[in-house]
Length: 183
Image (cartoon, rainbow, N blue to C red; front, side, top):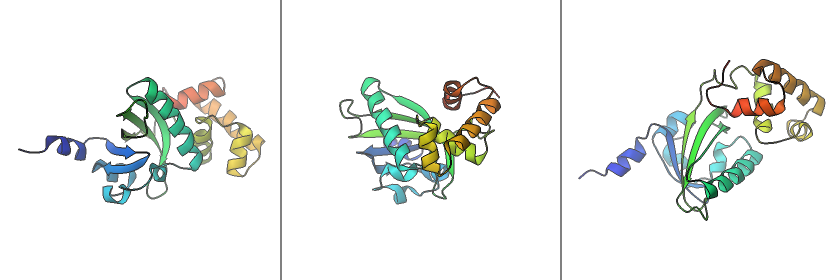
């Protein structure tokens, strides 16, 4: 008899990872198309490899850990890094096998979001700033991370607010994180 569970995992339509303490134990075949890494290249590596930076890794990890203690499935949208260094907007879903310790063993799936989605109209610099905004950084913190002035960050934020046709930073972040955004 065929091992249907193994086949389902390997050929899942989304990039699928099994993690133990944020280390990749197994990766589905779709991981290569989504992230550019062969499954065997990721297995045994920290999931940190797929994040644009250490801060993203820490903040998103903590947010997911808290949410997975409260609900069986966590969903978010975030920037992630491909093997070639390209940062792309992704939808992630995670479930913990032990709600008391969500990072002990978890299953995650990732799907790239269309470039015409919420971040599609933004310049590369605006996308970098958006990555920090959705993770709760202030203009000063973003400026420090990017090596520019807080005023430069504020100008880019104002441009993003105008492009996304929202009224303020809160609405901007909500729009960036929402699925199926208009315009």
